[in-house]
View 1 (cartoon, rainbow, N blue to C red):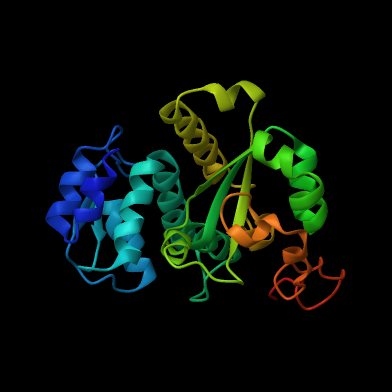
View 2 (cartoon, rainbow, N blue to C red):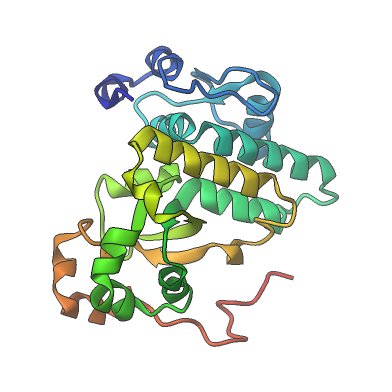
Length: 254
């Protein structure tokens, strides 16, 4: 994928050329080619339906947020198509104007999702338990050798242009064998894309935002220079403990 061409694509025609040159040109769930177009995004429902019905992806010129969404479509074409179809399917069954918990989860992942290929389930368990020092200090070597992270959310990508303490992603783990790390990058990203697409099509998955674990991304080895010092993880405002059961942070919306 030519990221030099992407960095120069600041309007819909240039983004369309970038999309057309992608290794797997993205299509919506109906098979229609994705077309970046210079249209106002409109409401969320209109935006998703336009993608589903016509393949048109609204982009605003000179906007990193929208441009990075195009990049996400090129990196994860199957998963993004499945996510859009799930949005539209949920809209079709909605019996109230309030966005459902399913669409809350889809939106959260679409904006701030981080895909973590993981060859060691015990590392994922440490994230879910908010055991940050054990994960990023005690088991740092395992994170380096048995993890690989790829931003999925275009808002997360935008924030990573100018990272800050407090930056947190919503994680989706994909279990991979150790051999996955030795495969060529296009093959690895295609494996993640296919696994995400399967999960997003599953009506029993992505039913609530709680399926997505928070991860302070500046703790990732190599993502922030200060995290080589174990004292970095003493910032409890950023590396927070797991909420107590029954607290307001873990309650579902009624």
